[in-house]
Image (cartoon, rainbow, N blue to C red; front, side, top):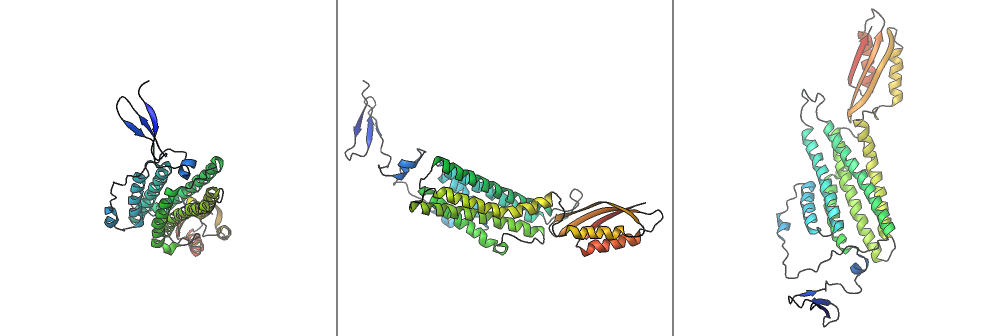
Amino acid sequence: MDGRGFSQGSSGDGWALNDGDSGRTWNGDYGFDSGDRRLAFSRQASFRPADASTPRSSEGRDSMTFLCPEQFQYRYSVGYVLAGWRRGRLVSDAFHLTFGCGLLTFSLFAMAASNRKADGSYTYGYKRLEVLAAFTNALFLLFLAFSLAVEALHAFIQDESEHKHYLIVSAVTNLLVNLLGVWFFRSYARVYLTYRNAEDMNHHSVFLHVLADSIRSAGLLLASWFLTLGVENAEVLCLGLVSVAIFMVAMPLFRATGGILLQAAPATVPPSALNKCWRQISAREDVLEISRARFWELVPGHVVGSLSIRMKEGADDAPVLQFARSLYHDLGIHDLAIQTLG
């Protein structure tokens, strides 16, 4: 024998390993009793007893300055990573929050950079930066909806009914931070919005981003409450509903921004109106053919078009050009390039 043995504590609730050679005693009491739900359901042996002798600092509370919701979320996400370093779920939530803050920062950058004037490299200017920022926010929200659906499916398969007490604090904090962002962009508080310019689209994407995060946090709190009431598969139900809600919130913005970036036909101009203009120009006496008619939105509220008109030989193209421009001008197409052939 090597001098080692087990001994039970006086209270009967802990075991110790005695090392006869070194005189060290390893205590196996980690603060769990037989009825602790964390011991019954947890799949990660990551719980550690709190050290009551360690003081908790509160200096960070007074040093926060609320310059904007994104800056506060950055500070919160860094602390979130440090606080939850030994809990896998908290770390994944923290990286999700940090990535979301990066997208919101890109939106702020686009707001500032889009005011630059057009130059030799970007002849149309930088307004589309705001459309790109809105598209990335919409894409992120769709990815979030998909990840929540996968998480709900995983919880259903694994039958995870654990009441995660440590997630309640994080969900409440997330909800408060995101509600602050919702208040900042409250003028864009609707899912469907008619965009007058690129700035409206970008601001609306920021609002939808913080709204979706608020819905997610509220869903986690609702699932926690249902678990306390003994509702089975509460996490599966709430995560599924949150996933569907975020998908419905993000899809209209994704379609609008994707259509602009892919240079689809402008949604503000009906196709029937464009066809009517085509027929009216083709009916002119000096016009032989119209070809390569293309119309798209550079940014919301700015429609660009181009077309080619083949004229009869020796015909004067000035009246036709004036007539075509007036037709498209009535449709709101002011940036129009017309090429005459013949």
